[in-house]
Image (cartoon, rainbow, N blue to C red):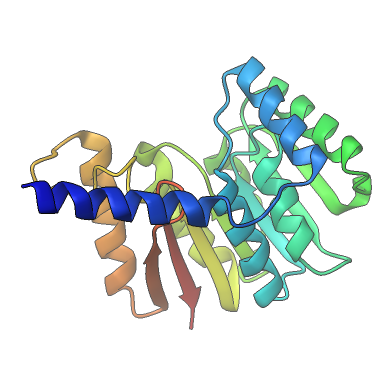
Length: 216
C-alpha cells in the first residue's frame, strides 16, 4: 500500500511539474484573476501551453472554440496559430464574452483575429461551414460534449484537430467504479472517437485531460 501511495505521489509531482513548464504572459495571469471573480475556471497552465503548441503544429488559420470563458484558451490558441488566423469563439454567457474582450485588449490582440458569438453552441456550430476549419476546441459540460464533437468533426479539414477539454472528467474516467453521468458520457465519447474511422486519437494527461483527434 505504501509503495502504491509513493508511486501516486511521484506521478502527481511529475504532473504538477509539467503543468508549470512554461511561464504565462501578464494578460493570461490577469485573465485568470478575472476568472476567479466571475467564478469561471479557465484551462490549466499546462493545457494552455499545449493548445499553443497544437495550434502551431497544425499551422491553424481558421479555428473554432466552444466555451470562451475569460479568453485564456482563446489567447493560447491564437498565440500558436498563424499570424492571420481567425478564431470563432462561442459562449452563452455575455459576461464571459465581455471578460474575454478585456483579455484580448490587454494582450494587444487585433480585434480582427476573433469573432466572438454569444449564443448556444449547438445552434451556432450548425451554421458554420463544413470542412472550413483547421482546429476545433471544445470546453463544455460532458452532457453536450458528444454533440459538439460530432459537429466539430464535420467542420474540420483533412488533418484538422478536434480537442476536447476535461476528457478525464476531473480524473474520474480511469476509475471503473465511478458511474457518474458525466463520467459515463465521457467514456462513451472517448470510445466513439477512438472507433471513428475518420479519426486518429490520443488521450493526454494535461490539466484534467485532453482528448485530441486528428481528421484523416
